[in-house]
View (cartoon, rainbow, N blue to C red):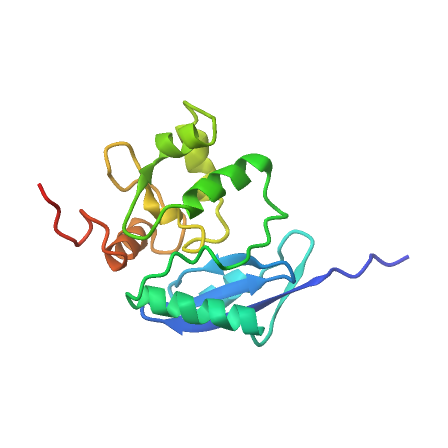
Length: 186
């Protein structure tokens, strides 16, 4: 008896102002997003890897994914959008991650929270480290803007996307976040 066929997820690579990004989606919404890697082939390879119970293959974006891609391209070029309107497939997330990502997704461009504040907002005071681990697993960076969560001292610590802290700082600068390329009052 052969194994049942795995449902398909679709993926596409696209150019942005900061390099080639990629997006993978199911019928429910975006499953994964990849910021630019060392080269477009690495980004493509990352987005096409198997995703839990789904096989991922390249496809032309559906109209709603094409709209999301256009918004991401504009955002990364400095025409900021909160991207909260983009539908996500959250079925692979556990309840804790889902709560962390919901709070994180509510942070507007140009604003930040610290890990402890996110933990407090999800009802897990003292859970800053667990929040950091959850954000380190975030499969949909930028759309779930984990780059907007900082250490308590407003310093950049850890960013699992390609380019690490340099990419995190670049995203904060694009979003004109005070203290990251934008003048502050003090």
